[in-house]
Image: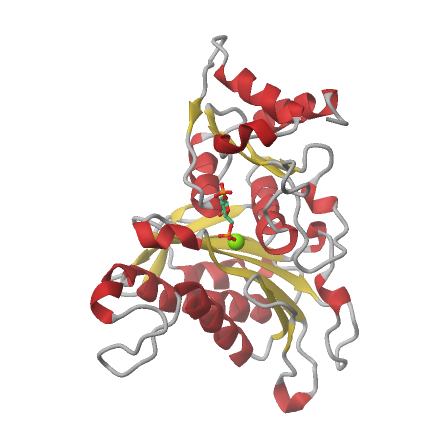
Length: 338
Ligand code: AHM
Ligand code: MG
C-alpha cells in the first residue's frame, strides 16, 4: 500500500503491521513505546537551553527535581518505557557498560525482542543548540524464550535486524524507521503531540554532491580516504562537491539521505577501528540506508554482514548514496594495507 501523507504514525503502524514478519501487535507495541519515549526526550532536549535558568546537571532545580545530564536522562527515559511493555527481554545502550535483562511478566523471561540504542547521539552538540538524535536497532532474540537473555542475543549481525530507526531532534522532531519494507519519516506536531507521515518512502539519490567527514583528522586518515577526499575536491564533471559536517551522525545522515551525499568516519592512526559503534550506531543506520537504496560499508565489507564480537565494538563507517559509497570503496581497495 502506498503510504498517504498526513497519516498519523499510529494509523500507519496499524495499516502496515501485516508487513511485519512476526506477530503484528508486537511491532506496534515496540514502535509505540519508542515514539512515547521520543516525545519525553524531545521535551527535555527542547528546554536544554534553559539550563542556566533551571539549573545545571547535578543541581536541584526550582521545583526541587534533580537535574540530569541529557544523555543520562534520555537513557533512563528509553529504558523505562521499553521495560514497561511486555515485549523487550533485553536492552543494550551506549550509556550502559553491560546489557540489561528484562524478565517481563511474572519474571518468566518470555519477551521476544532485544533493543540496542544510542539514546542521545552527538550530545556534545546540545550545549551549542545543534541537532542531536536517538538511534535504535531491534532484533528477535536467538536464545529460547523462557530463559534469560545472553550476550548472543545482542551479538547478531545487522542483517538480522527486524526494525531500526532514528529520531532527530532538529528544527522539528522526526522519527524515521524501517521494518525492512522501505523507509518512512514522521514529523512531530508539538502542539498536539502527534507524529504525521511527512516523508513517505524515503530514498537516497543514487548520486550526490555532499561529502561529510571530519577533515580535521585528514593527516591520520588511511590513504584510500585521503584520495577519495581529493577526488571530491577535484574540479571535474559535477565536482568539487560540497562539504557539510555537523558532527551529529543522525543529522548528517538525514540531510544526505534527502539531498544525496556520503558520510565517512574512517579508522585513524589513533582509532584503528574508527569511532562509531557497530551495534547501535552503524547497523541501524546501515539498515535504513540500504532500505532507502543507499549503501553502507567499512570500506571493504558490508556493515550489515559484520559478525559482532563485542557489545561496544567500533567500526569504520562509510554510508550514503550508492554510487558515492561505491566510488569511495574503490579508492579504499587500491590501498588495502595503508
Ligand atoms: P557520541 O556517541 O559520543 O555522541 O559520538 C558519535 C558522534 C556522531 O554523531 C558524529 O558523527 C561523530 O561522533 C563526530 O565525531 P567527531 O567529533 O570526532 O567528528
Ligand atoms: Mg553515539
